Image 1 (cartoon, one colour):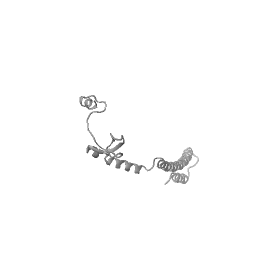
Image 2 (cartoon, rainbow, N blue to C red; image 1 turned 90 degrees about the vertical axis):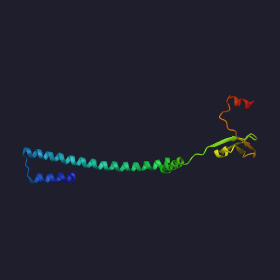
Image 3 (cartoon, helix red, strand yellow; image 1 turned 90 degrees about the horizontal axis):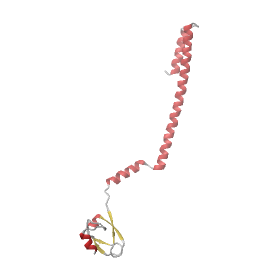
Length: 146
């Protein structure tokens, strides 16, 4: 039974007992009036809470729509990120042709052949690997630069 139904049942019991205007009867009637007011207050609060939940659900749906409009579909992005992580990234290197100065981009396989063909002028040139950089001052590098 709901609270109001239980309060009405209690009122019926009180009427059935034919409680008079004695001191105890007045106390019981006052307690019943208080109980009835409390039941009304709880019922009103229950209705308000239901309304708040409905509005909160509507706001949550609006927020989901807004997130999708601003950020796109998260599931698709997560799938793409996982695919990118699974694929190996192949390194690319930029080489400058000594003949025409054009920059050619090659992958590691072509670079390891040590013979590269310029995509611009068609000249073939060799790749020399060294552990030294341009500003190296070791004996081997300074001899080559002279």
